Image 1 (tube, chains in turn red, yellow):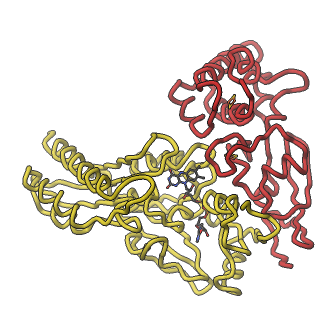
Image 2 (cartoon, chains in turn blue, orange):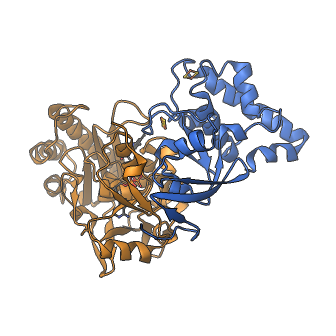
Image 3 (tube, protein in one colour):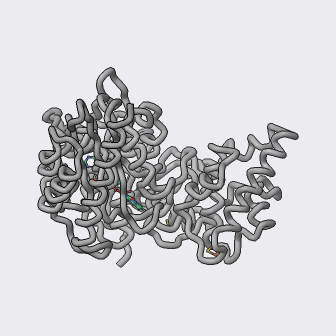
Amino acid sequence: MNTARNVNGREHRSGGQATIHFTVNGRNRAVTVPPMKRLLDVLREDLHLTGTKEGCGEGECGSCSVRMNGELVNSCLVPVLQAEGAKILTVEGLAVGKHLHPLQEAFLNQGGAQCGICTPGMLMAAEQLLAQNPHPTMAEIREALAGNLCRCTGFMRIFESVVAAAAAESATQAKAPHLEKTHHAR
Amino acid sequence: MRGNAQEHDLVAPGNLGAVLDLLAAEPGQWTPIAGGTELMVAFAAGKLNASKLVSLWGIPDLRFIAVTGDSIAVGAAATFLDLRRHSVIAAELPLLAKAASWIGSVANQSRATLGGNLVNGSPAADSSPALLAYDAEIEMISVRGARRIPYCEFHTGYKRNRLAPDELLYTIYLPRRFKRHTHYLRKVGTRRAMAIAKVALGATALVANGLIHEIRLGAASLAPFPARLMATEAALLGQAIAPETIRAARRALLAEVQPIDDIRSTAGYRRRVAANLLEEFLLELSAKAKRP
Ligand SMILES: Cc1cc2nc3c(=O)[nH]c(=O)nc-3n(C[C@H](O)[C@H](O)[C@H](O)COP(=O)(O)OP(=O)(O)OC[C@H]3O[C@@H](n4cnc5c(N)ncnc54)[C@H](O)[C@@H]3O)c2cc1C
Ligand code: FES
Ligand code: FES
């Protein structure tokens, strides 16, 4: 078995498996899996975080989107070894306790979710956008969500949900700036 | 058939030297994987023809953008988002920033690397027309040392290039001398986001005293690999932009390109569109040259 070290020099291998350490929704996790296992499958099968969905499995639909070290990625295209040491945020990490994330509230209120298969990916892509650009234009929203496909809503309600969430977040921030921070800190 | 993770090994040595040692120890045995947006798609389809992979992700020596007085050096593992976010690239090499914005969605651009796009060598690769128009050079590296060649000599055939089995693509150099040029890049595809080009043309040119003083044309999907349109450039160099020049340039282009017929389009359509793109660029160039 090859003993090449990984970025953090923490990689341990035995019998075609590697032990990978990372943070998922703020919790330190370790999994021992084949290093080529897709991050998507590790999240769903090993960590039982089944909010992240598989649509196409080839980078086209965005239903598997998660945030990795502050960037949006399609977890179906990430071999888990490349997530060693990373900070991962999945849809399960959006709500704080029983308080839904403003984006989740907005998707509920505006009819941004129907069957729900695309929703976790849409939420993560929208979260990525708002973290970097709290007041996006409609064109910016469309670009940010261009990699996320929905078969149900016809997209307009999704775009409107993001507009509503951005408005709600800036309203909360005006009242209590510290609250908004907690959502994007992870 | 689905890919099976058990059937592929993946290691992450974490620094450039260690990756090069591995490639040198068993040349041709290890397949580099950067952002994985090509290789993981092949893996998903059960078509990944590589049993041993070595990760280039997270290696700082391969992911950088360094600006010097006369060039911008881009590490092969810089992502398209890195390129889009770079202020000097946006200001001086707008075609590269524009091409970067086309490489799939944000979630793809956060992983897809410039080096992966070039080494994969699709005839339709979106970064290639811009790099050809900007006269880029590339540097390859192995334990034997580094060597630098013009990017227009990198591709040698359909998905074939000049890399030796123990070499990595290391740095892409972009000269900073295009501030006064006219820049053009247009991709024709089915949808604005997430569509592979049917045809794309990138161009830079400089007009002096009414004559085309410098011109570079980079094309996608008009040959088995991304290529400069050298004969068309030759037909334009030193000429004034008049209707007969444009007609001659269209003829040169139609004689020079070898587009393919495939699921995305036909060769005939690609040829016509390419000639129209060239004409559009020449008209822009001429309009710009006439402005005081
Ligand atoms: C949904 C989707 C949309 C896409 N849209 C576009 C598009 O619009 N336009 C476009 O051009 N492409 C597109 N692509 C293709 C892909 O994203 C790009 O080609 C990307 O730049 C590949 O880079 P990577 O780092 O992900 O490649 P990888 O998959 O990691 O590697 C690709 C190839 O390059 C080799 N390689 C990588 N880095 C090096 C290096 N430094 N030295 C030597 N060999 C190396 C690998 O061995 C492999 O053969 C799309 C892909 C997906 C999944
Ligand atoms: S499942 Fe990953 S992009 Fe479709
Ligand atoms: S809500 Fe069904 S796919 Fe989007």
